[in-house]
Image 1 (cartoon, rainbow, N blue to C red):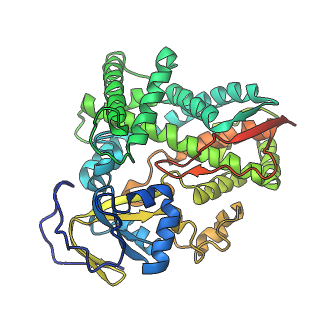
Image 2 (image 1 turned 30 degrees about the horizontal axis):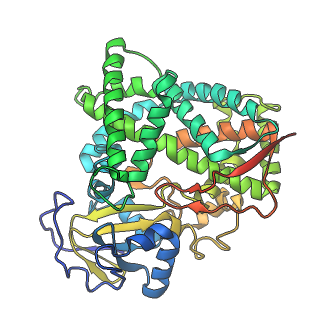
Image 3 (image 1 turned 90 degrees about the vertical axis):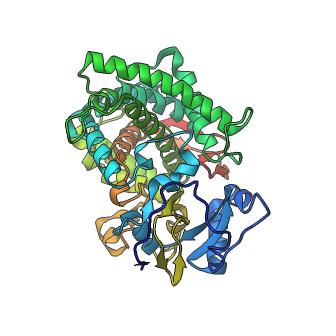
Length: 458
């Protein structure tokens, strides 16, 4: 486990440089001049990490996206970084170099007291009253769309992406997006792709340039909408809740901070749920026996094909939740988590200096055989209460952990359960024999070909 060095002045911003030789004592790979290991990481992040771990162990350095950094691998490393008992690790300074131009002041880019205060203010949007409202909106929207898929062979990823954006607009904004939906979707796509662009400045004709333009569009749109919500007041949608949320002293969040939170949370709900729902559909298509088990459960709970799943019955879909958790294990929507060490610490026998970019990897730990026997096999029964109790608490981290545990995780469970109840009670999800699409691993996993599936009526 970690040992803290004596207190030293904290780094205040990620732009402060390290000494060139500060990580020389840690084994690893600096890669090519200038590009370092960036292209290797982008091509196959999990495979690269597994090869590095096999060669160097659970602590190794690399040189990606312009910085030397240290990877810490394993459930103990996850606990150290995410639980962060001694407040060693900055999320703001970890994510900042990747996301600051695109999603500044999102909840994930805040630390310690600032994060705690804003998280408490925003949590009002995930209380039972608003969640019940979202469940009703999700149920109507999903049922109407899924009913149109009967007998169709289609690309599932773009279809569910369009649906999740519509659902986010309904649940989060309380209004249909209308003709601006395509522009909003393009802005989010450009911003997410820019997050892993090799060029880190918003130059013309670069991914970062397109991402910065997308952010400008969304800031203008959400600013105007925030002002409207404050004038009107009320509303059970998430945006109205955020727009009128207050801090501990009773003050409203500043308009620009509401805007930043909404942009970040819309992105998270839009893209991460799209990714995780797609991976679950893919895995159920490959494992039809689990389709049958989840279908029987959904039929018993809802009472028949296409019947609504009520908010009060969400907890009864136990097998569905286990299957979703297993999909999140195999294809986590956030494959890795960056932090920056504010103070020197030791882990795995290595001294890691203040200012070091530090990363942990859900994608790697979710495949470690010491936690997950036969790790490539789809087996939702890994998540029975008995099996969960046997495992390290931080062996499964698709929603992060500690103070930064995903604020919207229950919303994600709810949306996927409602989707599965509608899909599985109406259709068999089918794929062509031998079909195995390649998955784009970064920045949020998705099937490169869109995932071709058929929905055969029962």
